[in-house]
Image 1: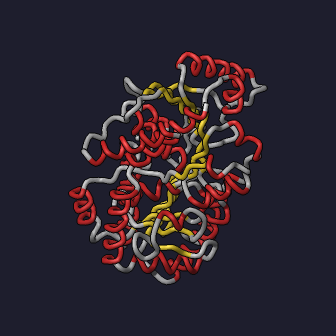
Image 2: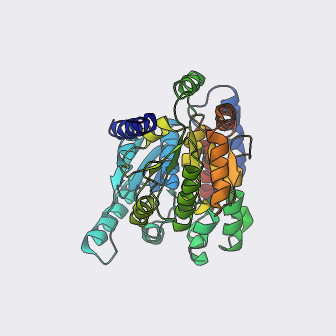
Image 3: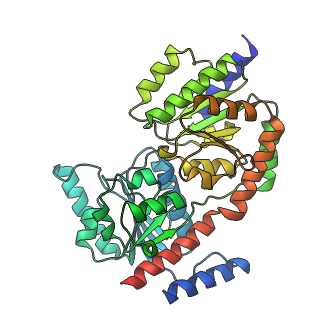
Length: 409
């Protein structure tokens, strides 16, 4: 058996094995939190709150991963949380959050007219009422999440997070009026909320996503263990963006024709999964591209990756890119929307022209064939997350937004 084929089969087996192994109050609070962080006492906020998270189905999406990371950090910092979700592939990660400070409840993702959906929402409203939250955070404005019923029944301040300009444009501008504050994860998303959603700029807060970086020793060990391996490009997220997937597979064809030593691992599910499999077969890309749809954990893929790809800004993968950077894995991102705010081109990652397969193939070729470039970009990406995009910073900024929303009432 050829060496490349053996490595590919080994990688595939390893992946599957790993995947089975989860106001003035505001100003003063921000100052106290930053002072505590500077002094090393950063475990608890100045004010402990009762916060309910109203999350959608726990699909393999960056917005879901971000919500789980934020909830874990807030709980760690001493807040009391009720995390309501509709289950899904990342349910094990949600279960791992449960603690004395965090209670998780389930609601059924069924239409209101459906009997199960109706009683599930009634039960959720009772659970929220019994929890008596001081604030409700809707981490993603999914149309299936029952935040409208909650807003109508409970007189509690509400905060929502918007993850991209494209997502904003799918929301009726009138619905933003249900929220005291809107969190935008990028300048691009904030401008969309202001312009499309017609939300006053002073009501929209910019809070960048954050993650926990691995230790320096682990970063060094990881780089050493991957030094002599065929480079692996990981793409993790929902298979819902046809244009982005088409660009990726066309780029894969160019890489195959150029005989570039790289493997592409795609992890996800979605309406274009069948389309993706057909395309892989039609263009004989099975040697180069591996599609994995076991979604309950993606850490195994991250452990095997040397590069991370976001083929389109609309694919809801930004938080996964940060998780890759936190492990010293340089990202290759489409040049659109909030992606420009995630990386500095040729410093902490690479940017390619969105929709341009040749531009993507050139970026992958550049990184895949230059180990020292990957190492330099990966180190810089890790440094950027460590100093600028930590989960603690994200939680502290959200605490300030919560205080604004509560004081608004």
